[in-house]
Amino acid sequence: MATIDRRVFLKLAAASGLAHIPGALPSAYAADPYALAKQQGKAVFYANITAVSPIMKAFEKETGVKGEYTRTSSSKFLPTILTEFNAGKLLADVVQAPLPMLEILKEKGVLAPYRSPSTAGYPEWATKDDHITMFGIEYVSYLYNTDHVKPADAPARYEDLADPKWKNKIVMADPATHASTIAWLVGLKEKVFKSEADWMQFLKGLAANRPMFVASFGPTPAPVESGEKLIGISMPKYILTKAPAPLAWAPRSDQPLLGTARAIAMTAKAPHPDAARAFIDFWLSKQAMGLLANEVGEYVLAQGVYPPVPGMEGAKVLPVRDLDDEETQKWGREFGKIFAAK
Image (cartoon, rainbow, N blue to C red; front, side, top):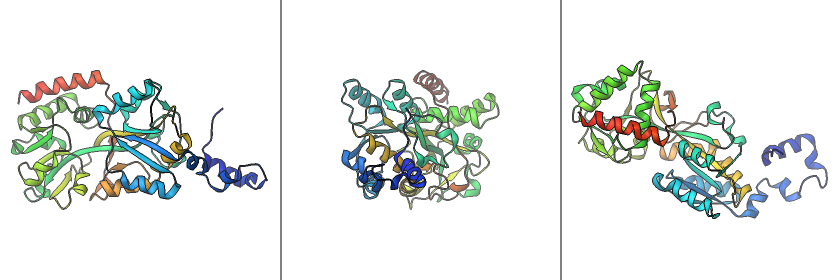
């Protein structure tokens, strides 16, 4: 039998008068929708997203339930959870990671179905899976140093990154090994460039500009901030988190920004199931998504909520297609050859 969210149930009960019938609802539950969650004590959250302390504090203040956060790096996320799950010792009630990782957990039976009422107003594509809810996009574009590059001179379109005037002036995560960069480059082929020939010409031009490679997006802003490089294929959220560094983002044309979808889910054998549902409801709310956007510049899917990055409210941000391990490795090898031939 399908279950119904406790808050929705209480609203229906109130509308029908059921809540006022003696004995129809447990008195504590009728008075406090978080009563069962409080009895369970806490919601344990495994995630690879960072800087979530404000949300954890706000969750406890709102619900009276403690949120216990464990940060797990992307490389250790799946091994950690699957090892604990297979041993029957998974402590997590809720898990968060890029969408492809949660899809693997779903295939392994780690996740439980749950539809949160907090997703009202979210894009349809973000809530189509009963087990996994997408709440944001790890958006990527390119940043430039405003002390050295005037807005009128900055690359206006992705194609402009291949202009020889940017030779030796670009930094990016290694396209042969960094999964998010690999997915982003494939996303450009599928969502931006009109033909594969145009996309390949762009790749070869970008490679000819001899970009400096780093391990991930994290180190990309520093060389741009310092002026060592003028452009970084990076994340616009760094404009907020690195302020007052001289950074701006592009393209400000009709081209979209692309990135991997961020997702959240409840575990199938959650030790604290009511607390888990309460946590997911709060996480997906405008209040929590506003904290994520405003505190760390994340691009979230809650309706009308945008990071305070200049111009971002008018940007078109799209999720890239999920690449499985085999396809990621295939494209990584291909990009390695292209960029090695620079």
